[in-house]
Image 1 (tube, rainbow, N blue to C red):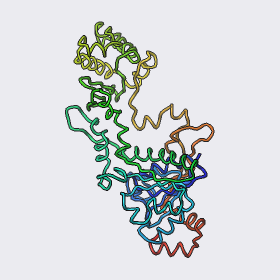
Image 2 (cartoon, rainbow, N blue to C red):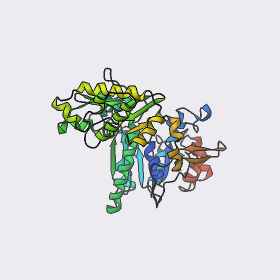
Image 3 (tube, rainbow, N blue to C red):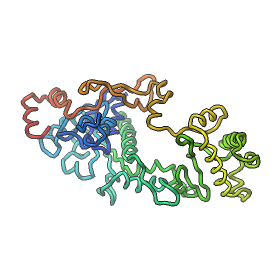
Image 4 (tube, rainbow, N blue to C red):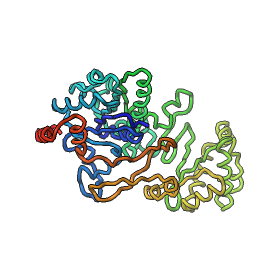
Length: 413
């Protein structure tokens, strides 16, 4: 889809995923790293537990479908070479703290003078402007500032950080989408623009919309383990199984209540609850709670019955019953179960990429979407440090071997 276009990816770990998404869509993405490689390359775990800049799995996870060059942008010669690359680029992605690229003469205004069609994307913690624009950050800080942290953890304890860092995954994905919006405008007007992505703003979309609840008069959401509290009601979505956990949509109303009714009939069939519990009006249960006909404590009691019942079944048994009895139950998969998923295998999800430097192929997660006419392809494994210096700086910018050797000796590449 984006095969005619080139992306210069200057990001650090904050934005690598944005370039990979554009690369998956077909763009020629050139990752520009400092000499020695991006800091992300020095984060484990490593392939075969061998620490090496070309073996970081974190780097591999966000760097496929890219070529790679090294340039020291703190040096005038490095910046001069980058400007030459900008002249023919369509997108530039960067993730420096506001002010750093301007000090280098590489901010949007400076590079738009070189290439007015350039779509320049900045990914930062709090955006380019405002009192927090230059504040330090971490994944924990951003999830706290954006709201999701308030919903993570147990009800009777302080909030917990989310296990896997994800603030910049949200921000980078939003940045890729925003870059394409700007690209659409450029196709109409011929002009590039500066896209300003705030990670804080991006993660507010990951709060189950609870930040919007007060604006429409809905009770504010509360933190409970495996679910969410809404006003006096605690809705538990995750229940134990004998070999893990399952997600159950245990709710009420005309759309979901019939599923709850069938679940309670199954539990009663196996002696897990009495007939009175089984035959409650699960369609009108919300109305009955708020009218006082049923108590909120009754929900807690029944959820405990459900949990006691699911604890006696395996995830596979619960899934099989969900299919046979039309219930809203889904196993909570482990990483291995995802890798071994029959559904993903049937859809030919996984991709093998050749790593000639290791003498073997490696399995990667597949494309995030399947387009029938223009399928997304994994064309390249992540680049090794400076792998395409000769191809791009030499072949495209016209530097000869002596130039490249001199730049390497001077620490520019």
